[in-house]
Image (cartoon, rainbow, N blue to C red):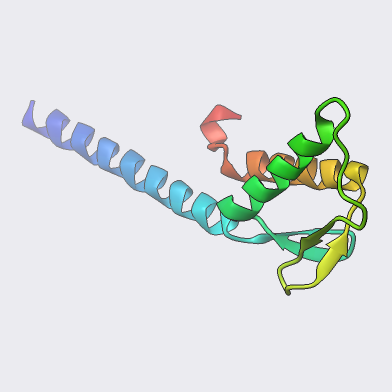
Amino acid sequence: MNVVRKLLITADEVRARRIDEIDALCGERLSGKVVFKGASFDIDDKNRLNIMSAVLSAMVPGGVLPQGFTMQSSDKKEIALSSEELFFLQTALTGWIYLTSVHPEMR
């Protein structure tokens, strides 16, 4: 019984270690960048929230982006985006995050 218990604990430890490795990799990827319209954009929480709020503002009935709307790229350049381009950027971020953050067991 003691041998079985040691094997079970070892298997649990291996599983926990693997989950930690996957979480660390996901965290690393989520602190990266995505390229859109030739510019790279940070995909950290702050930038994703900024993009999401701009998309929501443009999507409400009668909502439009201000004339000359821009988003700041990773290298601090202002990139002009239309409502459609902003929506596509947000969609690209969402898709990229989903593909890199979902554990393989859940795909």
